[in-house]
Length: 286
View 1 (cartoon, helix red, strand yellow):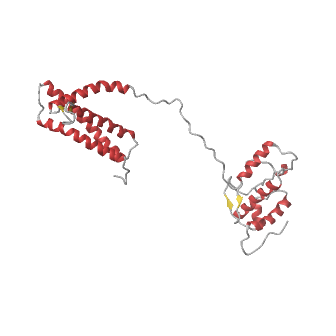
View 2 (spheres, one colour):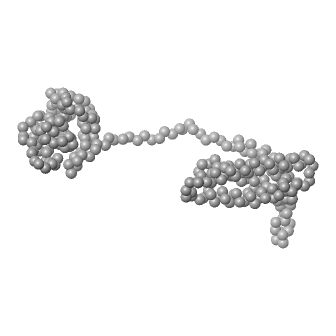
């Protein structure tokens, strides 16, 4: 048995490998980490590095010889320190084979790939186990919910809402106007249609923005408040018209006329503000 290196300075791992190689030749097997620590008088880290280097060296130079270390009975190691995916065998069963066996080669290849490598500075690079990524499962049976029944629901609601807003508009001063005097004197339009188009369209748009979840938080909060407000105003407008019509009123009281006259301006302001918030990034939480 060769004499271990003795020096007052730390010995690099590369200088310990020749002595460890001689020890492996005398024992007829790769010495364990504890044996290397005792023979080389080194710590656990360097013994581990030398042990990994011997395993890699024997695997590269003697592919037909399957050498693996047998830990001492008093040695406590973990799977990360001693990686061996091949089946455990007794020392007397280790022998050379003339023809490699396929299962053993597969096990040895897996073991060699996971053995920590010795770096140039004497350290050990950690073994990285291969990972497998699985593709996300897709539900091929999932189908989108059809939205065409909404058209059936919207048709009668559209007729009732349209007629109510137009009737209320006529009671509050909305009516036929000439929007292009001097240009197209014969062109006329009933301004009462601005009420159902403006209020109900904005309510539907703001409701969609609120529930979409694809806009900034400020825009969602504003859309939520204004959508509910627009729906409430629409309901109040319908109630006001039917009450006035049932009582035979031909001109709405001034509070109702004032509120209805302000609706187009309010809808324009809410629509412009919501469009601005949708395209503006938040700079901080509010």
